Image (cartoon, rainbow, N blue to C red; front, side, top):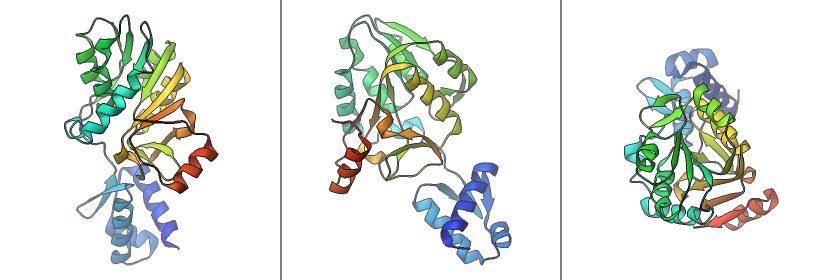
Length: 248
C-alpha cells in the first residue's frame, strides 16, 4: 500500500471513529509503528488531524479567545471592506467567527439593518445597536460560540437574505473552502443559497491549510474579501475558476 493510500485510510477512519491508535493502525495496515507515526506526523503538518498520546484525533476548532487575537489587523481591514457591500435597510447574515465580529462592530455606521447570526458573541454585541436581530437557534459549540444543527438550519431555510458573510477555517491549494466540523457544512451552504449575494471573509492565515469537511469552492461566492497575496500560479487558477477576489 502506498503512503497516500495509508494516509487516506487513516483520515477516513478518524472521520468515522473520531480517533485512532498507532498500534492498532500498524496491525490493520501491516506496517511498522514508525511508518504509522510518520504518516500521522505528515497528516498533522498538513492540518488534517491532531496528534495525541498514542495516536491521533479529528482536527478541532480553534477557541474564540485564541482566534480573536490572530491576524487582528487583517480582520479589521477585511471588515471595513465588507462594510462597503452592505446598504441601509439590508438583511444580512453574519456567520460565526471573529472576522464577522469585527464586521459587526462596523455596522453602527448603517441604519435599519436586520442582522441574522449564529454567533453568540456577535449577537450580544449587535443587540446593543439600533437594528433588528435574529438569532439562529441550535446547539452551541462552546469553544467558538457557534450555533449549529437542525434548529439553525430551519431558521435559515425560512429567511431571504440580501447578503451573507461567511467565514472559513481553511482553504486548500484548489481553493476549496474547508471546516473541521461536519455540522457547519449544512448551515453555511443554506445561508449562501438563501442570500442574493455571498462573501467569503478570509485572512491570509487561512490559505494552504487542510480540514476534513468541504463546504464549497471560493468560486461559489459573489466575492472573496481577503488580505492574502496570491502567487502567479494561484492567480492563473483564480482566473480559470472565475473567482472574484476583493483585496482588503
